[in-house]
Amino acid sequence: MIFKKVILIKIVVLAALVIGVQSCFVAKTYKRPHFEETQNLYRTDRIPADSLSMADISWRSVFTDPYLVRYIEKGLENNIDIRMAIQSVLAAKAYAKQGKSGYLPVVTGNTHTKRSHASENTQEAARLKDLGTDRFDQFELSSLFSWEADIWGKIRSNKRAYMASYLQSAAAQKAVKTQLIADITTAYHRLLSLDAKLKVTEKALAFRRRALETIKVLQAAGRANRVAVGQYAGQLHQAQALLIDLKANIFRTENTLSILLGETPKNWKRSHLKDERIDINPYLGLPALLLRNRPDVIAAEYQLVHAFELTNVARSNFYPSFTLSATRSLKSSTFEEWFDASSSFSELANGITQPFLNRRKLKTRYEVAKTQRQRALLSFKKTLLQAGREVSDALYAYQAETEELAYHRREVEALRQAEADSKELLDKGFANYLDLLTAGQSALKAELDLIDSRLRQLSAVVSLYHALGGGWNAKPEHWGTHDAEIE
Image (cartoon, rainbow, N blue to C red; front, side, top):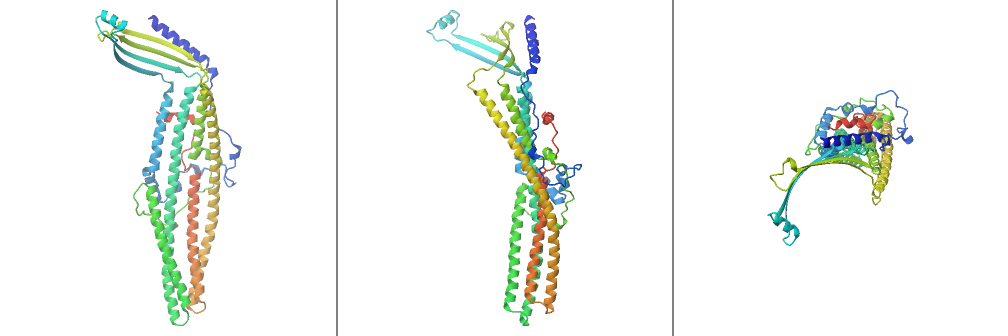
């Protein structure tokens, strides 16, 4: 009874000591850094201050093609990079759970038996012989309770460091998903553009076959020569070679899409380039939203948080640690008396450990932790600047390609009309074969350029989607609120 009172008194004294020194809390609280250089990231004044950000729009709202949606879903489920990222998140989550258990005591159990035989030429052997035995047995069953008070915030900082590492992995997984969606969409749009080029080239090929037959008839009538026939034949063969090249590119792009989807190579069903719609306004949102939505920015900040908290841990190692331990054991020299009450043994201890000289290890760890924190800070700043550049580039590219696309459409209309007029004039004898040859070549090139321009416009939207973070949920202002995610 007296022993239990002593234990209770010591626990109360230690708890009072813990409360009394809380004012000396060493660990600092993380605050998001402010960078003046990242205030005007986008180089555009077309962003209204009161609008919904495109960064908050899901990929399902940006990419609405039913085939593309199906392929993105398949890729998110099957892609090997995604599955590898999930394993990294699970490992980080396990460490985060370990960090949350830092406040709990350590309880261990131990049992062992021991038999010792003394040398016959020692006094110990003589004493054992007087006892009628030649050996010594020992049976022990013990349990140890140990608990460290988090006076200086070391355990809390360790917990937050593990949590930051987990959330960094989760953000990195979202970054992998965003990149995958962008890659699948880019490959799909490239297939649509190649299909469109293939269709245009097949039409041009059919037209050039008819034109070659026409010029041969004109040659027979004395209205054209062998040079004209050779040039028309050259144009026909050029279109045939282009057709083969387009089919080879389609084949390779389908294989690329298959790898992204985690499937064996095959032909993938798809819609048409002319049916692709962009029903979003890319000039939406505030630059500050980039901090909340882009996974690599979030991951870079959590890397900074992780380094910050480890600096807290390294600093707290300079201060004394307060521990409370208790041992309860059963010891006996015979198995029959092992579990008797007389074999019971208890011990309670508390202590303060203050490091003085440790071969400079503690100071080195602290200095290294500070340099790693500064490196993480610079990495975070670089990630922000890089993100701003990518968004700025994507916004400008979309604007430029939209304007360029309009001119390419007018160019195609004009050259198609010129080709038709040249053919009509040639049939009536008011133009020569060179006019039709040049008009046909120019019209084909313009149509292919129009398709490329449309592809670049779609690619700019994909780049903007990727640069703004992929439409994942925004990160709360205080990262510590994610503690509830680990159970």
